Image (cartoon, rainbow, N blue to C red; front, side, top):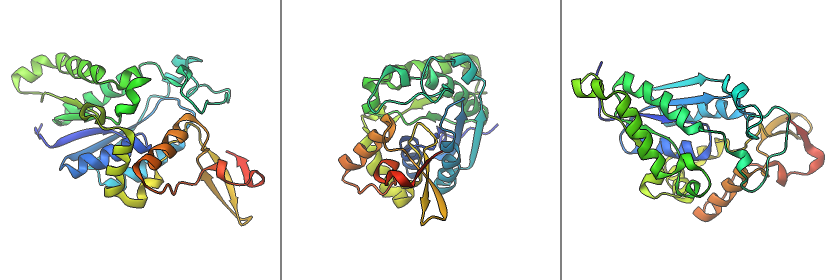
Length: 252
């Protein structure tokens, strides 16, 4: 197994934050490997967008990991994996927090990183996330880094495994607007191909013929997306259902 200090595994959801994080790391010279998770979430369309972003960024390998069984374990603990179509709030409520989600993602991504001799595992948590999401805080990042390396301490000591750094934009104090600015400089309008919506959005008729899937523009994640573009001083070219006449909307 080759050891490469420039190899990094990046968790890529298909959303704005992870796409900008991947673009940033690629710009920093990392040989990038991306992993996307299906964990039973209502919004599956983000996985298709993750594939497109991975290709756009130019990762070495992109893996979509199916851990959909988690949906049955989560049950009704959160709105993102519930199957009853319950509405998602436009402001933060703890009902949208998926229990220990990033701990699960980082553990799996870390196992892959150890296996390919990577030096880093990264995910898109930023400074704005720290207020409401425990598994996005810098303290959590440090704890996960310690736990992962402790799990492979003998291999690291013997030189069989490479010590991992766990990194997120929050570690360097970047907020969502900072990330958007970085991502836009690297990806340009391709950034609008990302999918932030917590649902699969809605389908909109264009000229009575072509149907296009767009993001709802009303859920907490869509609202934060719009706010970040505004704060970054970038025109948001994303099409949202809320800005389209209601008689043209068909629920997806």
